[in-house]
Image 1 (cartoon, one colour):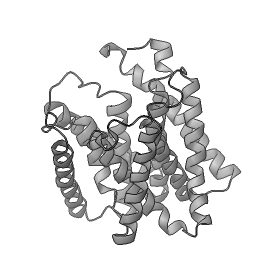
Image 2: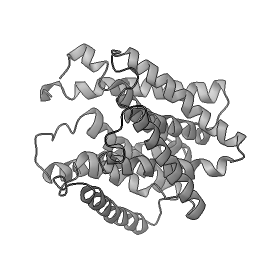
Image 3: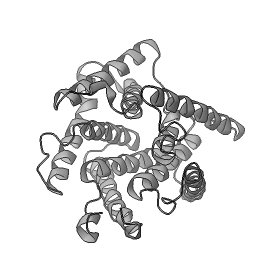
Image 4: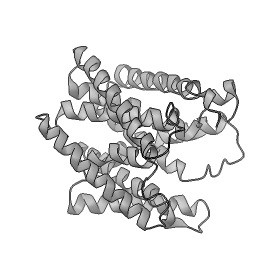
Length: 299
């Protein structure tokens, strides 16, 4: 890519992400009467569906241009995402199963990404995405049955290791070694994060830590996906990863202070930020860098 197109190349889609998130909140709360917690559940199932779309290689719309293919996939992701809680309720699985299923489904798609999507090597679409989907649902169901759910503490570190560190220092290893060692590193860093929460007198399961965590996810994703690790893209690893860690953590503390100073309680604020994070991911998956590419030209 041409570096001088950043940060505009990333900021333009982020503006649309903010607009989409606000519309989602306004429609959900004012027209449908949904509380912030329920809205965040719908948003997370929505982005989970978008992640599945990312594994489909744009099937069956490979020849459709932006923004039309993005609008199609955005509509599909929203509809299927919203239907998840509805289907669960019909099947007798109430709200107590929402977060466990979401957390476990994301672990499934995280494994698929970390292992380079080797599970479906050689399969054409739609067989590949169908089997990836089946794998994630079976894994999520088994984890719920035998463990309850895997807390999403690992998720921020997954984003950091995969998209900021770019799987350094195991990038050049073959699979499955690269995927296994990537998750070893993620697990180690997750333990450090958990210890950091304890030193601060909190835990991942408390609203204050949950708000800090989701704000950090926002900045990790915004800088690694939308801004493509600007302004440190040209640095080599691990310097780039360390610089990214410093940038995102500093912005997280500043944002956390601003949000908590607004008077909004941490639990409600965290739910709203999850909606923004969901749209941040989903927009990049279905639209890529549109409309920045329309305005600035393709890289």
